[in-house]
Every structure is written in structure tokens, then in C-alpha cells.
Length: 511
Ligand SMILES: Cc1cc2nc3c(=O)[nH]c(=O)nc-3n(C[C@H](O)[C@H](O)[C@H](O)COP(=O)(O)OP(=O)(O)OC[C@H]3O[C@@H](n4cnc5c(N)ncnc54)[C@H](O)[C@@H]3O)c2cc1C
Image (cartoon, rainbow, N blue to C red; front, side):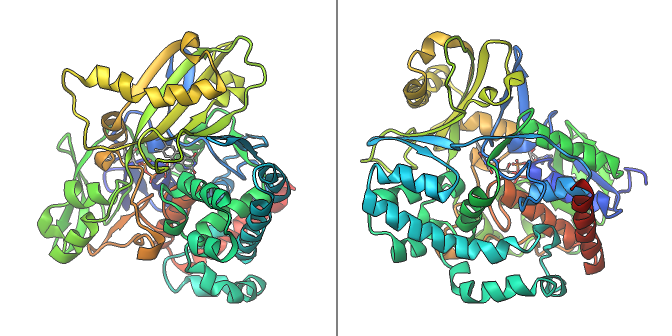
């Protein structure tokens, strides 16, 4: 079908937008994805400078290379028939804490052994907490996320998994709890409580009481049962696989195509207008822009009920980031590990700017990401939007605010400053500019106490949303699940069922 009259226009090629678009194409719909940037992938896009291939965002993954994976992204790639290769590793990271360095192994027994060196009592309590999460994970993991729908059509699908439903019954209260509430029931040790807050913070940008229990259960469950792995070629390999899948099933991706407005007539969307002035008519529009950008930039105020608009745009946002992308000399760095988290100070909150620094050196696993004898490094930490503007002091402030990242890196590579061959410092302004995200935010700060993230529907007929400001939330698996939910709101349950059947048969064939 001609791209000038697609059935669906998707605004944005983040992982959420691409999953929704590729699945809809797989379901036989005509789909056009319009992406502002000249590179697809949003927060997960990759870029290259002087032979160094950088991840712009995510670098912690799991279950990508597992043929039985519960990871929703892997399930989508399976039905798109777009296999990817991933490299498994363990420990999944080193947490450099003020009290010492903790190697974090993926399986509980090993994790517990290392925690025992810091606090034997806390290690026993950690085991009780993780065991509680695994009880929640087990029934959830038996239901393929590829079959999820945001409507009652999900009921017949769920009924095909009676064992999982029975297993979920005793867990129903935990499903609605925060990880912090489960923590309160199982862990008193202050050090382990801080550790679990850190684990939750790395996931959601919030502490354990702010993070929903099923999300944390999924992460610990996956660690226990599936490889922690990194895609060969970096996060852009995932994006490229989705783009190939989209195109193979007839969808179209238009890069460098900024959508200026979602067109609405009498409470119904009828397409989008591009920055170029071109109008793409469509009965369905899916916005992968954040909720703030969708409701304030892409729609006119009158398009939405006033109370709804006010409530939605008042949603608090997690801060943005300082990024350090480095290409470095790798001479003598033979035993380097790929992932590190550094907490500088205990007397500051984890989310305090510069205090918690994440480090990824993926060329340790995939040397092709850097020239020979070099490494590619990405370090990042939260940074508020408020103080940033492009003025005479910008360059100097970038250097200043990158210092905590260099200090964190020095814990891993003491002479890091002497090794730098390429240095790119990103600020919240960079993050906002290249990802088109409101204030460069990581995503909505919707605490578990406030309830769930909003679903994909909007008050405007034909307008849906997808990505990390919709259910289930932030992070690659969650965003892939949001793409599944969004796509399946547009097809009948019979099509969802046949997609799940093709997943089962694709997996059967590959075994
Ligand atoms: C620094 C960082 C590290 C992270 N690390 C991890 C990790 O290790 N593991 C993990 O699981 N998750 C991680 N995450 C989270 C995860 O990467 C994100 O939640 C996810 O990639 C977001 O995808 P999305 O589809 O919601 O939106 P986005 O990636 O934000 O994509 C939205 C797209 O829409 C486009 N767009 C917006 N407005 C318009 C418009 N008007 N017209 C056209 N296009 C438009 C944007 O250009 C963008 O490409 C990390 C995120 C960041 C920022």
C-alpha cells in the first residue's frame, strides 16, 4: 500500500515505536514510522566517531540470546524472524560502593556469597527478599508477553495458562505492591536495604518504595534463569533488527522526518503534519514521543479535555543525564569488566547529581565496537534539566559536571584521563536535542504508591501512545512490552493468538 495513505503513522522510532510498528506490519497493516533524527532507535540508537561505535543509552540487557527467552523484545524479534547474536557474561557488573567493591553475579547463590563478605545477616535477608520475588516471577514468566493485550481480549489468552494463573493467585497482593513493601517484610539490614534501593534505582530511577514489585521480580527472575547478555554490534544491532523486521513485513521508516502536529477533527485523529508541511493522512496515529511532548507539543490545548491534559502534564519526570562517551587507549587493560556502577557518597541520595555513575565498556565483550587496542566507554549519571542553557559558560560547565564521571571511571581505570582519544560530553540539552525528550528526562517518575503508568489509550479516538511513558514503564523489556500492548489494541484477539502460535512454532523449529 502507498505510504501516502498508511493505516497507521507512528511518531518516533524508539524501541517502543519500532516494536509497535513492526508488529502491526507483521499483522498486515500498512505502517509509516516518522523519526526526527537521521538515526533510528531513540534512546537506544548507536553512533560512530573515529571508528568508536557508541551506545547512546541502554547497555544492560538479558535473555537476548536465549532461545526460550521471556524478554518481550526477543519474542518480538523471533516472530519478525530477525535473529540477533548476544554475548553472555557474569558477573553482570561491579558495584563500587563506599564500603568496597561488590561483584554482582546473576544467580542468587553467587550474589549472596559476595554479599556475605559485607554482611552475613544481610545476605540471608537478601536471599529471603529475592526468593519472595522469584515466587512472583515464576507464574508471570509462564505467560508469553507477546500475547498481551490492553483489553478483555487478553482473558481467553490467559486462560490457556491455567497453571500460571493458579500460581499467580497467592501472589495477587504482591503484584500490586512496591518492591519496598516486600523489602520491609524481609530485610532489616541497612546495607542490604541500600543495595536493593540501588538495584531499583538502576531500573526505574526511583528507590525500592517507588518501584513496582513485578518489575523487580522480572529482573531478578530473568537473572536467575536466563543469560545476562549484550547484543553483538551494540544497542544499535537491536534497533537495526527491528527496522529490518519492519521493512520486511512491508512497513516504512522515514528518517529526518519531524512531526510537528497530530491532526485532530471532532475528537478523532486524521493524521499528522510534518515540519516540511507535508500531511500524512491516517486513521490511527501512535505517538512514541514522551507524554509531555505528545500532550504539549504535538496536540493543541483544545484537542484534549482540560482536566485530563492538566493532570497528565503534571506527571513528575525523572531527571536527565550527563553523558561521557570516550574512545580510549586499551593498552594493558586486560582484565577489564564490562559494567560498573559507582556510588561516590553515602551521605547523598542515590539520585543526587553525580553521586551514582553507571559505566559500560562494551568493547570488552565485542572488540569490533572499537579500533584495535582501543575501548569504547559510556559513563552517565543523573543531572537536572533546570540549570542548563547554551551560553558562554556552557563548555566550561560541561567539563565541570563531567568530573564525577571521570572520578567514577578512575576507580576502574586509574589513568583514564591519559588514555582519552575521543571525548564527547553530553548534557541534558544534548539528551533533549537528540532524543526529542521533554527536558531530556529518563522518563516519568511515577512511584509505585501512585499506581501504574498510563496505558496506551488517549481521549482522542485513533490516537495511541507507546514507549516508556506508558505501561509497564521505563527500560528496554518494558518498552518492548508497551509496543506489544499498543499494537495488539489494534488487532482482534485471533491475530494475537496466531502470533503467539507462530512464536511457539518458530521456537520449535530452532530447537
Ligand atoms: C542513558 C540511558 C541508559 C539506559 N540504560 C538502560 C539499560 O541499560 N537497560 C534498559 O533496559 N534500559 C535502559 N534505559 C532505558 C531505555 O533505553 C528506554 O526506556 C527506552 O529505550 C525508551 O524507548 P522509547 O521507545 O520509550 O522512546 P525513545 O527512545 O525516547 O524514542 C522516541 C523517539 O521518538 C522520536 N520523536 C519524538 N518526537 C518526535 C516527533 N515530533 N517527530 C518525529 N520523531 C519524534 C525521538 O527522536 C526518538 O527517536 C536507558 C536509558 C537511558 C537514557
